[in-house]
Structures are given as structure tokens and as C-alpha cells.
Image 1 (cartoon, rainbow, N blue to C red):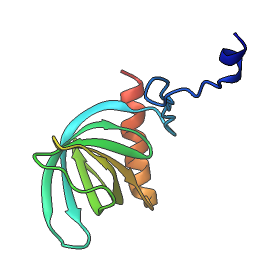
Image 2 (tube, rainbow, N blue to C red):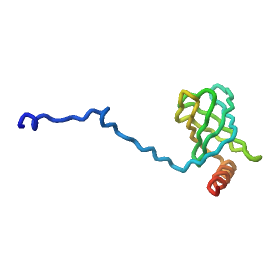
Image 3 (spheres, one colour):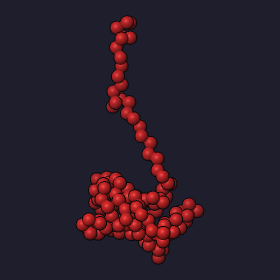
Image 4 (cartoon, rainbow, N blue to C red):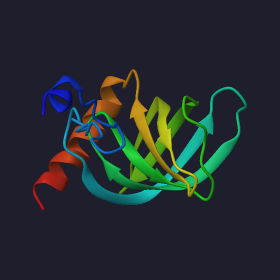
Length: 123
């Protein structure tokens, strides 16, 4: 018994993985509309689809992913209103799903975004 007590057990990280809980700054709402993404460095334009929306960003599904870290201009149009903001890809999967965070949202665009979020909350 003494020999067992002297051996220290170090848990295997694969057996006991650290689970990270992602804490979002704002609730995401299902929101499906077309979106235009423009890479600010190359000026390449891509049409995609928004899948969810929050006050700070959105999920996007595209035919091909844009690399993480890419700076974009996002333009979302819905019911005659257009939201536009410089943005950044914060994650991208191989199948084209991306997370995009908005940066420096102008006041007029913020009003449009808040209106859409309020409409989604009321559903």
C-alpha cells in the first residue's frame, strides 16, 4: 500500500479535458437573409447567408469560408433597411460557416440593428 500512496497520479489531459463554456456578449437570434461580404484587403466580394444575429455580430453560411482574421465590410439588407459595418471573421469552418464580429458600428446602422433585434425578441 505504501508504494501506491507514494505514486502520484497525474490525470491524462485526454481523459479529463478542460471544458470551456463560451459566454457570448449578447443573445443570438435565428435570422436568415442574404448578406454581402467584401474583403477590405483584396476588395473581393462574396454573397452569403446570415444564419443568426446579435448586437455584436452574426453567423454566416457561405459556399466557401473566409479565413479567420479577415477584415470585411458586411452589408445586410432586410425589408428595405440596410445595415453596414466593418467587421472581422472570428472563426471559420471548412464547410463555410463563419462567425463575424461587427466593429465601429455607426449610429444609423446601430439603430437598424437594434430595430431588427427587437423584432426578433418579440417573436
